[in-house]
Length: 276
Image (spheres, helix red, strand yellow):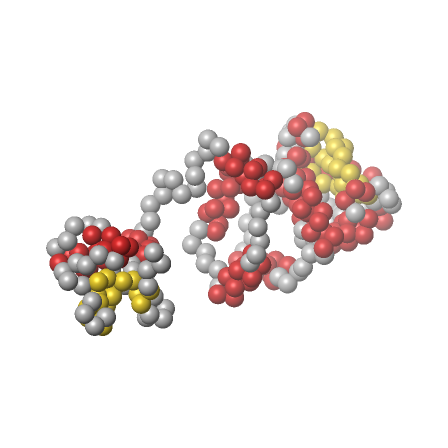
């Protein structure tokens, strides 16, 4: 449909009963691919007659056809009206039989809210979901579209209920070896999603707190806990030790300053005995 990147008059024809929807567009390719077929597949087309017929007969029984190319955009509505006049009312899906254009039209806030309420709660049937999925498979998403999606989602946070649903849905899920291999190949030579990104100061603090390990200072004579330290860094700063000394002492159970040092489970508060 590369030749359709221009203005003209088109029709969406039902191959079963011959009924048509007549329209005009500055760019017929975009009108079909980003408006009509997308909304029909989502069961949200503004023309209810066309939508019901599409749901009944299926996408395979509808065809997009060019009736006439119209280079002069000012004549689009005139030519559209001529084609509308050629059909009887019963042959058309068009609700509005007088050609009008929404070009440059801006909807009020109230109108947008009414449109939003009209589609709220609608759910696709499994058959419709399958059709939408199959039609989208293999289609690359442009960088412009990805940027729009990213901008739309920026700052949005999932509710606790949504997070729990996502967690339950993904529990136990594992990629097949074939999928892992495909992902691996696709990422070769590409920059990782986290490269070049910087954490916010708040995020850094959260990560630091999460990685802090409480350490117990134990008297080797009676095995009693002398003190619980919030982190290894705190111990090293207090006793003026080299970085890593406490970590080594915990791993190898070496005495420092006459004491034994062991990790503490943050949740239970119990001393974690070394495994080796």
